[in-house]
Length: 370
Ligand SMILES: C[S@@+](CC[C@H](N)C(=O)[O-])C[C@H]1O[C@@H](n2cnc3c(N)ncnc32)[C@H](O)[C@@H]1O
Picture 1 (cartoon, rainbow, N blue to C red):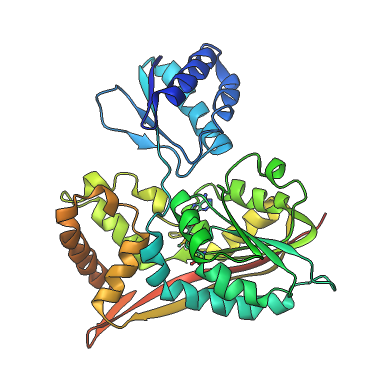
Picture 2 (picture 1 turned 60 degrees about the vertical axis):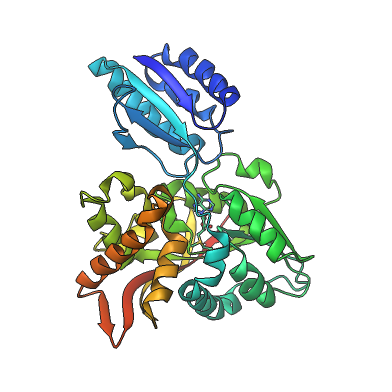
């Protein structure tokens, strides 16, 4: 059943993984769960399962996944491979996170506008300590503009922010660009099963803007946010429920020209994108993990890109596939992206060289009860 395990990030790690995995694959059934928990040191890994080493990946099991996220999926695949008695290759590759920090910092007007609105709508309604000595967490801070320019100014004067992101490139950029005595930046994956050990005191507030649609394992992420809060602590989470950009990812994934670069496109689509009841779905997740839901809404939003270059930059800044497309095909990819966008008549309109996109945004305010 177990054939080979290789990594793209160094032999030492690969040997380590191979040892642990071969040890555990000899134990049937649920014990596999523990196998892959032991991989949680492997930050932001994907687990790709193929039927033979030479075949392209059949499925990428998890995005920016670690620990439990990988664990559950790996257990399923291992059990399945026992049943059908097929050799399988497990390949761990680097995390899929956003890395275009500089571009994102200048091409994220839409995200900044929406974050600013959500902050002004909800931060005043949150409960703040009288002495203001709060340290809050910002999950998926990216290049740090929202953290520094929008969140820090609304905190009490002594408030501090720990801003985290799964992308090392983002954290490197943010910690230089937004150095500030009340800010600290560090790499962290919200799916990490050991967050409580990293932050034993927890936070009175958690914020997250335009990050959580990247996370397919919603329950794990929301449970982690819950557990990171102190009792009575609150979280304001703002992220995409649906967007035409996800429709374009889907369409391009079925195009012969682009499909080979976008096989894992499902990992980059909001888990609620096709839901007819996104608000209720998200509310259910929040209640299941123990939150009291103070506000959960899906807002219909429109953003107007004044020129195509602005749209291209915005797409480039968040697009997870472009890095895999040969550089001399980038312009062609972006042109096709634009063409596909224009076909989405109910969601995208073009007038006088301006393109307006309709999308849906979650704004969620929740409280940890105990
Ligand atoms: C679109 S940016 C948002 C940045 C900033 N919050 C803003 O509103 O402009 C999303 C960020 O989430 C990060 N991210 C994605 N998955 C993550 C995860 N599992 N844990 C932590 N950060 C993650 C990405 O690396 C990226 O920097």
